[in-house]
Amino acid sequence: MKVVRIIFQIIVGVVFGIAAGLALSPLFAAISDGKGTAGFFVVFFVVTLLAAFAPTVRRAFGRGFLLLGAAIFALPVSTFILSGVVSHDMVSGAAEADKGYAAAGSVIAGGLMTSIAGLFGFVLGSISLIVGLILSLGGRREVIIVERPQTQRAEPTLRR
Image (tube, rainbow, N blue to C red):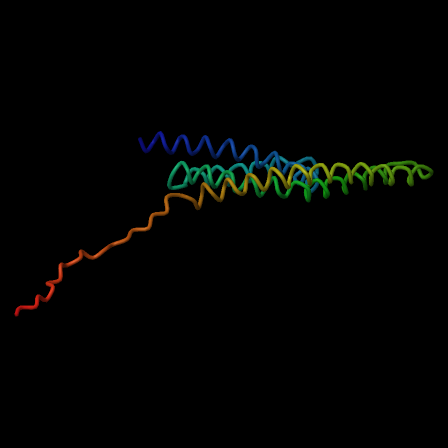
């Protein structure tokens, strides 16, 4: 049964690793010159290993959701960086007379991309982080109350 649990945890790690890598793909595209796959595979393997070595399946899901939530929460920043790189490329590639229009268009497009990514990143990232925290840290919280047995006290009787 332990082997089935480990295989299931690896599958959970693979799914969340792919999703976290896709959420960080704008950042990998911006910082690498066509070699963004290395960053994707690093994130993929880290998430897969963390989920595979979790003590329970619930904790594996929790770790996956936490890492995915962090990656989605960082989506606006990575989109902002990517739009800055694309804007620089567009302005530097434009003709001298069209540099102003290219700069204005790239700033508007980059702002729209970043704001949409911010909306999705905040909402989905918050939900994923909350679910991850509940699954990772939550669980049965039991309070055990130990009561001492009540001894019967002998009531003093008055004898006359």
